Image (cartoon, rainbow, N blue to C red; front, side, top):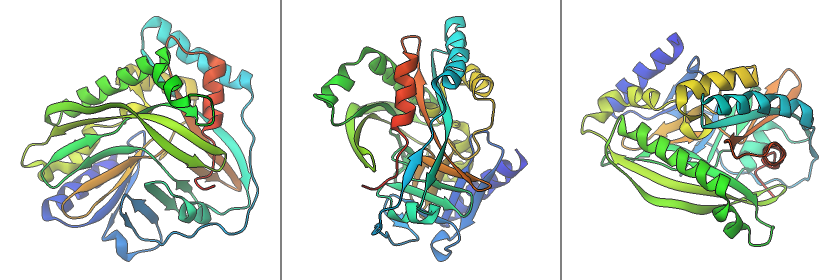
Length: 323
């Protein structure tokens, strides 16, 4: 936690003084990074909304990409752990993730530079992230907004949008997350509201288009928020959309079911431009361990979930961020 406490202090000081910086915090709040004036360096590649330190480079040569999903029985063992927790009442919504070996002819740098996602991050020889999901953004007036994503479907299915919006389990899950985000924002902001509820985002991937359901939750920060921006960020972690509700019991159950740390996967990264902040949840994530690459993906589990459906969803989310 010492490293995160140091970064928290650096964020407070830099935001107070209006200095630009890039930051990242891992899921367990054990590690992170802080880079001042990040547009002037090229070791860490990043894109946060309209800000980036690299030029997009479309892929010209088609290389192989193959996933080797964990077998269903292995996933079912993890699923049973969280489902028993749901039955006990330890949680009523939990994000369960899996680590899938992959192979590809593309480098992590090529993947990030060719991505079309609003958020991207490359930590050399460590990870590539091309996230579609905002954690929070804060505008120049102190309005804080979050855009939780919950609900995924293959866009090629007949009436895909209508199907996902009408699905009982997905609807209940999405409402739960929106309520959790409202509660989280209420810890740091006032006048918390939901301007948009359950709208469709279209995501193009290397395996075809998928639809995701999102909402917008926003509030108003106190006028002195830049004095303690780092404290506010840490107060909101871990992100509700990739943990669950209630958070304490859910995070404990995640540790038990997954059996390993997530690290930067499902953590956050973001950029402060001197006036405004934009940040992402670190999903759509490839990490390197030795010579092996792993794609990490997850889905939300409730008491109404079906194990086979959730297994299919985590595998559907394994893709490269370009067609």
